[in-house]
Amino acid sequence: MTGLKEKLETTIQSLTLDGQPENLYNPIRYILSLGGKRLRPILVLLGYNLIKDDYESILRPALSIELFHNFTLIHDDIMDEAPLRRGQSTVHEKWNQTVAILSGDTMMVKAYDLMLDTPKDRLVEALQKFNKCAVEVCEGQQLDMNFEEYETVTEAQYLEMIRLKTAVLLGYSLEYGGILAGMDEPQLRKLNSIGQQAGIGFQLMDDLLDVYADGATFGKQVGGDIASNKKTYLMLKALELANPSQKKELDRWLYSPDSDTNEKFAAIRTIYSEIGIFELMQTKMNAYYDKAFSLLEALEVREEGKEALKKFLQKLMRRKK
View 1 (cartoon, one colour):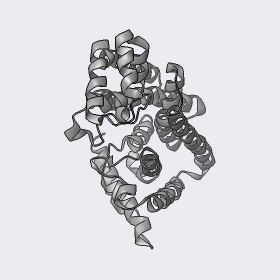
View 2 (view 1 turned 180 degrees about the vertical axis):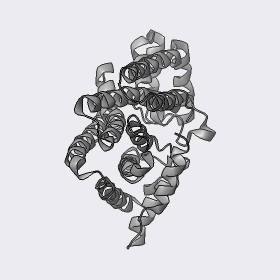
View 3 (view 1 turned 90 degrees about the vertical axis):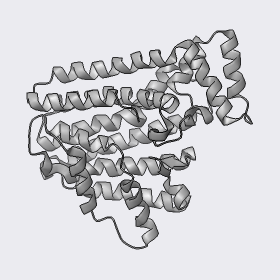
């Protein structure tokens, strides 16, 4: 399978995403034009390809997941007051919050329109599972926002939050590909588990890149999590493993609202390096991907489809942005 992203981009261009008033639809085309990994629709295609090879026949329903994902990004950026998305202004910065909320809502409806291309004998199943996933994504986002007000967050709480906020959608993406291909329920459960394990690893890498990525290529504000005191896995482990002087220094930066953002980022990153947070994160992330690979190996599907999915997941593990 080659050129998946290019085929998806071509299909996006063919979608009817215009109408009146223009300022409702322009932001939809804008955020989709910013590109992105198209990770979730690619997973739909790869899930389908595990037993069928005519994946070009499901490009439109696969993109329903991409529209839903971008709907969540528009709303998440409002909640996070994020200035950048994929290296460009976020929708609420370029227009305003009201336009961003309404455009996001419209994207959600358009996602359902595309999902209607699901074969009729599997449509109810696909919609029920998608609705469950969509609610879980909202639950994860609310937990993420709640954590900003919590004095302490446990490792288990954090991992459950990212499972909901990020991983369940990757799990459903693979499962939806299986539904479109006609897989049975036991296979679908395994596909969902593969996606969720990889999804947790993916989010841990996202947390890592927020601190260690090259700002010129990352596409988002490097250090944004530190600036907003987000309780990422890195911060939780640093607070757990810090010696008394490091803990005192971390607390000073975390509870000093008027501190210089660049100085704060540099100081906390130095503490992370002293503790070995980068290496610890790599080990944790790899453990989740290893579980996904193990589950994939046990699937009784086409070998060429299995190899294509494995290579894609390996590429995600090595990403730099």
